[in-house]
Image (tube, rainbow, N blue to C red; front, side):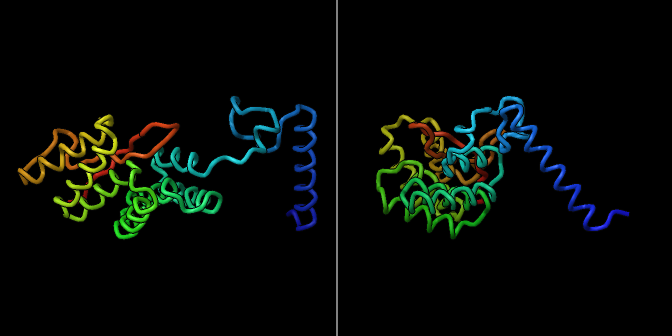
Length: 197
């Protein structure tokens, strides 16, 4: 049976071995266990990664709770600008926290009334709450601000109009889904979200 001192010494030897191996191979410790394509340049590892970028990737992977933490980190780093508020609202929407999502998305459009992803995602919240006419107005606003360039927003607007006009409306293999959009690298990126109404 290994006692506490032996465990400590074993751990110290393992840490020493790991550091030694990294020094000899010029591999940053942070890169260990992260795949063969991980950059070996320590400068790349030490750069802080934007919390919004990390959050967007986590959202795309379906890791909404972890994405919310990344967006919270972005808020601490960048402040509560429209982009961060919209991201926080979108993560809360994916987690089913409609009240919190609505509050954050409304704050985002108050900060920047031309921020299209926040308007679109606010439309999804309103639709999820059953407020279809207000959701339609918000989708129309997002569509107009975007000059009709986003297929996702156009699709959302079409779906909400159809839902209002025909309560039995369904989209084949896509019942009641809307496209959640976010900004990334100067363009809109989408995530699917199921509408609960």
